[in-house]
Image (cartoon, rainbow, N blue to C red; front, top):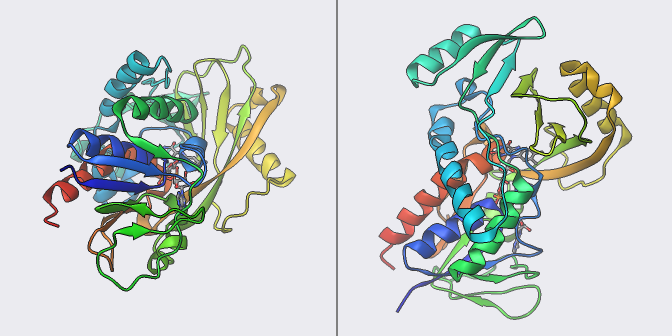
Length: 337
Ligand SMILES: Cc1cc2nc3c(=O)[nH]c(=O)nc-3n(C[C@H](O)[C@H](O)[C@H](O)COP(=O)(O)OP(=O)(O)OC[C@H]3O[C@@H](n4cnc5c(N)ncnc54)[C@H](O)[C@@H]3O)c2cc1C
């Protein structure tokens, strides 16, 4: 009989893990406390590149590699099967006024990653021609429909409780709504909320708030993702412009303040002064699953034999999701329980 896997949390990490495990022949259920894809994975910019890979350990770039190729193909499949276009687009990224030119050139040579000298409004810039973007709310909408077609069971509005079980192997995990979830294996993909159900991960995975704004579509055209002084501005296919983001360690505070809006506008308008004349139509918050050095936890749980963790992808979870799903799938396929 097929082994049953319960995936706890329906963000991009839970969903791509579910798809991979279903393809390997497991019976899969995703249990989500709200609705699929409405937290961090909805809020992201969808840049499929770790913005400054030269500044991280090579593990970060390794987890991000081939992500763009994956999403290019996956998007075609999602459009075909669901009719929803996640707007994958290889727009390239321009890093304006790079501060560590030599380090970037060295990284590019070492990784055979193409970069080109360029300019932006007369300032020096580096163009990364193969950097792509995707539109997270549409990606998650398409994935939700796709998962349905694959026969992956989805249980929404159901929140797993904190574990206080002394046995090493868990057969049932209690929920706040009453009925427990039964499975042979559990995979915790609950993003910034991991430590609420597995407190051992409290100082390992924690929320890092990110805020972004969206400008109305106008006649302004931005060809590339623009990255300047730790801040990015990019345009979607329908013309809206996204700018962000903040990186704040403030717990799960969802409040949006006027001063944050002013900060985000000021940073965006530093890159493109013409934005001053365009209306900001949206401003939102997301909770990244923060980790030290941006390296996620993808392994067996510290305590339970049949629980695995796939979380803590911090700033690059959309980008890292395909590789993380492959890793968790290999661990489960090799598991001898
Ligand atoms: C402003 C911003 C910009 C970003 N930009 C990018 C970018 O350009 N590129 C990129 O690659 N990444 C980006 N990211 C990061 C990326 O969005 C995250 O790393 C990624 O979404 C994490 O995915 P996840 O599935 O782990 O978490 P989430 O999407 O948060 O999913 C976790 C899910 O678990 C559920 N859950 C929690 N607790 C429980 C429970 N007890 N029981 C059941 N369900 C539970 C939650 O409701 C949630 O739906 C950005 C993030 C933000 C906030």
